[in-house]
Structure formats: structure tokens, C-alpha cells
Amino acid sequence: MPKPFSQSCENNKAVISDTLSAYVDQGGHLLEIGSGTGQHGAYMSGKFSSLIWQTSDRVEYHDGIEEWVSESKHENFLPPFELDVNSFNPKLLVDRYDYVFTANTLHIMSGSEVEAFFSLLPSLLNDKGMVFVYGPFNYNGSYTSDSNAQFDVWLKEQGEHMGIRDFETINQLAEDHDLSLLADYAMPANNRLLVWKARD
Image 1: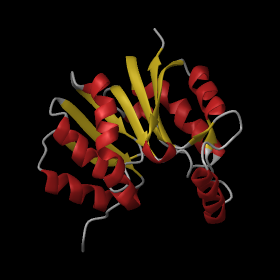
Image 2 (image 1 turned 30 degrees about the vertical axis):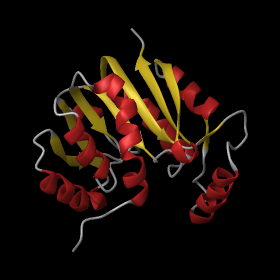
Image 3 (image 1 turned 45 degrees about the vertical axis):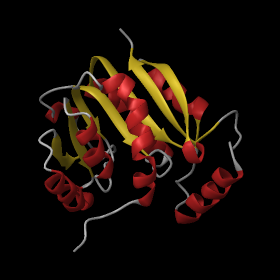
């Protein structure tokens, strides 16, 4: 059975890596939430050999992620543990993380799941931890492109709980959980990479 593959991950992995390099080149321990296929971790762990990349997702995605982990042979690319934002208990963690990364997840979560994601972050991050969120966002209540508007229609057809999130709402959630916005990068295909840092 072939390992899972996402064309969007293939398309965006290099530009995400280039942007993350300013923050993670020195190494550390990163938790990816919603690892999906595992492609981002396979690529990034090869690019950043001093960065430990910990995958996580719901159990149904673990077999596919583990195939990418096994094939990569990167010692710093770790098999997934179960993490559902609705039910995860951070007290189960031995250590906190220097970074949390998630890509193309907030628009497939429900609004309450997005809130749950941000409520988890303070208990996942160390004192100077950083958060990276990649995906499409609306600004001032408006789509940034016609293609994003069409994508949002498609998302809502898949599930009423899905949809492109408003940047202002997301940033307020981050602020409410002691995170300060460091950067908002424009990315290809009308996506963004948002960077927050835990407040001292």
C-alpha cells in the first residue's frame, strides 16, 4: 500500500522551510499538530538536522505518518503520538516544546476546535516558545483572492463547521493565550505563515 501523499504539502514544503529557517536553524524541539501525511516532517527534519520534529495527529493518520518516518531514516523525525485538540491532556507530556507548527488545519477545524487548539498552546510551549501556523486567512472580513473565496465555498460543502478563518479572530485568540504576533508572511497560492511568540 503506497504511503499517503498530499500535493499541497509537496508544493509548499520548500517555501515553508525557507521561512522557518530564520527561527529554527539553531535547533530545538518542535511539535507538529495535525501532521496529516507526514510529508512536512519528512522534509523539514532533513533540512534542520538539529531540530527534533515530533509528529502528532488523530490515530487514523498514524500509519501513514509512520511510513514517512520510517522511509526518511532521519533520527530527528519522531513517530506520532495521539493528539486531538478536543481531548488531549497536556499533563501527559514529559517536556514542553520550543516550537509548535501546524499547516492547513484551522480551516478544517470547527470554531470550537480552533479555540481548543489555542487553549492548549500555553501548556505545550516553553517560556520562550514560538507558534507557526500556515494556511489561508481572511483580512478585515474579506477574502484575499477569488480562489480563496471559491475554496471557502468548497470547504463549507464538505462540512458546515469548516471555513477560512479571519486573521483578526485568530490573532485575538493568540493574544488571549499570552502569545504576541511576531510576523505575518505572505506565501504562494494566497496562503500565510503566522508567527507568534510566548510572552515573557
